[in-house]
Amino acid sequence: MSAINNSDTSPTQVLLNLLDNTSEQDAEKLRYFSCSLQAQLFKHASGILLMREDLLEWHQDIQESVSTLSSCPSHISQKLYSSPLFRSWLNQLVTSLLEEHQESQLRALLGLWNNMTYLSEDTAIKRVAIVSGYLATWDVGLLFELRGEETQRNCDCALRYDREEGLCVVSVSLPIEQIEQRRLEGSSIIVSNTNPLLRMKLDERQVPQRSGTTYYDQIDESSINFPPDFSHDTYESPYLLIKKYCPDIANDIDEYVSVIVPRGEPTGWTIHGYTISSYQGACWMTDHGLLKSVETMVHEMSHIKLRYLEELIPIFKPDDKNLRFPVPWRSDERPLVGIFEGVYVHVMSAKALCTISQRHWTDHAFAEGAGKRALEMVKDVRYGLELLLEHSDVTDVGEVFYEWIAQQCADIDLSLSQSKCYQA
Image (cartoon, rainbow, N blue to C red; front, side, top):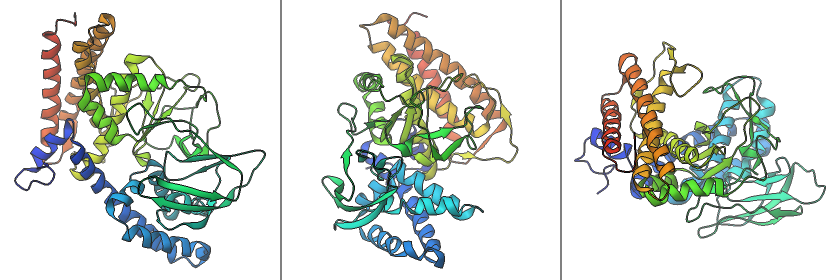
C-alpha cells in the first residue's frame, strides 16, 4: 500500500519515503493533492469574476468552464490543473484581481479563458486568443502557428477534449499550421521553446530573484535567449544517461516535468537552468555540456518535486527576519528558504552523479568528473545545512528533513570512497 494512503504510517515516514524517488502511484497522489488546491483557487477566482457586472461578456464561458471542470472525472481535470500553462495563467489572473491598476492585464488574461480552461468532450466553437502569432492552449503539446501575414489577436475555434487524444482543435477560422512538439525518447516530456507563453522576459540588469525579475506579460522574441536552432540531443542525451544509470531518478523526471524549454544566456549571464513556481512542471535549460546538463535536469526536477512535497507535508517554516547568507552555489546572498531548497536539489543531483560515476565505466574521464562534481556538491550542501540548522526552523514533521540530507551526504561520501572507478 502507498505510504500516502497508509494510516499506519507516520507523517515522518511518509516524508522520508517521498524525499527519495517516488513511485508512479505516489507521484500521482502528490499531483492530485496539488491539483485540488488549483481547483479551489480556480473556483474562487471564477466566483469573483461572476460577481463583476463589467465582465458580463465573459460570464457564459466562465460558467461553462466551472460546470465542466466540477463534473468531469478527477483524472481528466488533473491534466488541466497540472499544466504549467494553466497554472501560470491562473496565477496571473488571481494577481490581476487582487492588485490595483491591473484592469488591462485582467482583460488580456480573460481573453485567454477558453485557451486555458476548455475541457468539454462536446465540440463547441469558442473565441480563443492568438498570442504573438500562435494559438496556444493549456496543453503544452498542442501549438499552432498562423500562416501568411495574418496578425489577428483572436479567432473562432472549434474545441473538443478526447480522453484518448487529449485536447483537439477541430477547426479554426484562420489559416493555421500545427507545430511539431518533439518529446524526449521514451517519454511524454516536450522539448520546445516555440510557445510564446513560455518565453517570458527576464530583467537582464540584475541577478534573478524569487520575485520581481520575471515579466510574465512580456514575450521575449530574442533568438539569443530562445534559440530556434537548438539541438534536441542536448536535452535528450542527459535524460537517456540518467534513465540508463539512475532509472528511479528518471522516473521522477517523467512524473514531475512536462516541458523543457531550451534557453540561451543573456549577455554577461551564466544560466544552467531554472524553474518558476507558478509554472510548475516546466523547466528552462541551457546547453553547458553533458555532465552539467545531467546535473541541471535532476536539479530542476527536484525543485518541482519539492514544491509538490511541501504542499502535502509542510517542512520549512518561513520567517520574517529577511536573513540572507552567501552560499557556494550562487553569486548573490540567498534567503533561508532558498538555501533550504538548494540543499535538497543539490543533494539529489549529487546522488545522480555519484551513481553515474560508478557505473559509466566506458568513459573514465566523464565518470571521474561526475564523482568530483558530486563531492563538490556534497561540500556545498553541508555548508548550507550548517546555516539552516543554526538559523532556520522546520515543522515537527520536517525535522527529519535535515537528518535525511546529512545521511545522503554521508552515503555519497562513503560510496565514492569505495568506488574503483573514481579516483580522488
